[in-house]
Image (tube, rainbow, N blue to C red):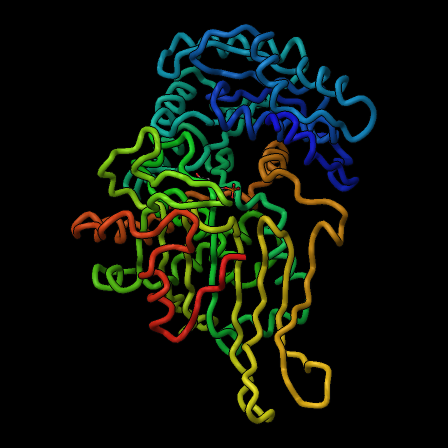
Length: 514
Ligand code: BG6
C-alpha cells in the first residue's frame, strides 16, 4: 500500500473535530519543510485543521529549507502525504484548496541575509492575505540547527510581536537538548530572544487523545481518585514499546538512544500525568505546576541505584511479525560496535505522600514483539481472602494509549458452575467502539492549541530541565561503566532478561506485551 493509500484508508472525520471558531489568520513558517517530520506529520496535521475550519481561511504556510524548490514543487510534494478524503464534499477540491496556502522559501539557516529576505516575504504575505502580523515559527530541523535559527530570528527582528495585538510564537520539536546542560543553554537562548509565553516545546505524546483522556479519567470522574494512591495501588507500569526498528534515523539515534529519545520526554511525561495532584483548574499554569512537582519528587538516582534499577538493552537480529529483521548494529548508518541502547527499563520512586513506597516501573524499546503504549495500575490484593484455596489476581487498570486505544479494568469473577472458582475478567472501553472513530493525529491537536495560544499540553522550561536532571545521572553512570554485552535481546522479544529480573526480584511481573 502506498503511503498515500494508507493515510486515505485511515482517515476519519468525526464531528467533534470541527472548530466553531477558526484561529486568527497567521503565517506559519516551517523550518525543515523538506524533512520527514514536516511531510509525514506536520502537513497532514495542518490539512486536518484546515478542512475542519480550525485554521483561519486566510492562513499561509511558508516552508523554509535549504533545498532549492519552487512553490509548485513543494505543493506537489505535499500532496503525496495528504489524505484523499475530506469531511464533506470533494477530497480533491479540499486538497487543492489547502495547497493554495502553501509557499516555499529557500534559505540558509545561519545566513542573516536569508532572514532579512524572510522578513520581507512575511510582510508581503501580511499585506496580500491580511494576516495581521501573526506568526508561528515551527522548528522541525535537526536539533543542532535550532540555536542558529533562534539567533537569526532575533537578529532579524522577527521574534517580537508588533505592539498592535498581533502574536509571534515558536514551536520547538523534541529532542530539547542532548543533556541537562544543553537543554539549559537552549532555554537560555530561546528566552533571550522570545518570552516564555511565546515558546511551545512540543512532546507529541501529550497531544494523543488517550493521553489527554488520562486527565479526564482521573479528574472528571469521582470514583477513581480515592483509589489513586499508596493506600490502594501496589505498583505502576508504564510501557512504550515499538516493533519498528531505528528505520532511517540512525544518524540521530546513534547519538540519542532510547533513554534520551523516549524516557526523557514521552515516558516521563506519562509518569507526571499519572502521578500528579489535581490541578486547581485546567489552564496551562495550573496543570504544568502540578506536573513538575512530580518530577521534582522523583528520588534522584545515584551510580549505585542506576546499577540496580536501570537496565539498558540493544536488539540483535530476530523475527518481528513473521519477518526476519537485522540487529541494530546491522542497520544502515549504525556503527558495527555501537553501544547505543535501543531499550531501557527502570524503576523510579516518587517521594511524596501520595506515592511513597509505590514503585513505578518504566520500559521502552524498539523492535519488541508488539507495539504497545500503556499505563498499568496494579492494585493491592484484598486484605483477606475468604474464598479458601482460590488465588485471585489483583485488580489492574490498564490505560491503553495505542494501538488499542481504550481502558480496561480487570477483576475476579465467579466461573459459572457448581464449584466456586474465580477467573480474571475485564471491563473494556474501546475508543473506536464507543465513539466510532480513532484518535486524531496528535500534531493536529497540538498545532491547533498553539495557534490559539493554549500551552497546557506543551512543556515548560523548568519541566524539560527537571526531566534532564533525572536522566543525566543515568547517562553519567553509563559513561563510566562498560556497557553490557550488546546485543542482549533478539528483535521480536519482550526485551533483555535483566529487565525481567528488575521486577521479578521484587515479586512482580511485567505485563506481557499485548
Ligand atoms: C518519537 C521518537 O519522539 O516518538 C521515535 O523520536 C519514536 O523514536 C516515536 O518512534 C514514537 O511515537 P509514536 O507516536 O509513533 O508512538
